[in-house]
Amino acid sequence: DQQVKQNSPSLSVQEGRISILNCDYTNSMFDYFLWYKKYPAEGPTFLISISSIKDKNEDGRFTVFLNKSAKHLSLHIVPSQPGDSAVYFCAASDVGGGADGLTFGKGTHLIIQP
Amino acid sequence: DSGVTQTPKHLITATGQRVTLRCSPRSGDLSVYWYQQSLDQGLQFLIQYYNGEERAKGNILERFSAQQFPDLHSELNLSSLELGDSALYFCASSVAQGKTDTQYFGPGTRLTVL
Image (cartoon, rainbow over all chains, first blue to last red; front, side):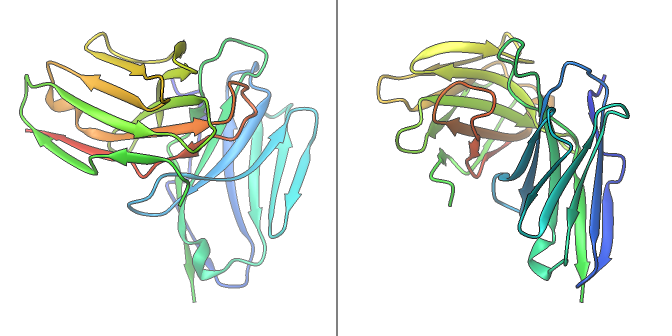
């Protein structure tokens, strides 16, 4: 049973436009969410996070939005650049619960077209 | 470069064999996490160690075991290997054991079981 779902395996966006990556979760105990970016032959790199007490967190070109009632979060990248082409993983954890590591989605492959 | 190192980069072995994957965390990090990424899957949390002690267990098979040594490096031992164990194995480290502590990932070890 997948608790974190990224329903779009891939997404193609033109350079300079906005990229929106989506993520849904089913476990209502999750209260901390992260996005990781992964290039081929490298490990995932932390991008941005958000606590459930917030609905938005911004860091430069990256903004994460959290809709707790819909159990949905999204990552916005504006403007998209060629170096943003990578696989993006959504991850979640239950901070107040047992130490279970992060629960990851399967990833979305973002392709930025020139 | 995340500062987390993993060896070997690639490993090819046969069913029934035993292998050891090694991870050196970032300098100063006390927690080590192991994750498995099978084909088309998200990263699955296996196990966490903190300062030499097992902290949390995820979906780790009984054929797999891990340990963290006094110098904080960690080893993941996989035995009685099966074809389905072929995957990317990532190690991550964080400064402490809190769930909001950023996990920094190594480049991974690609295991192929023939």
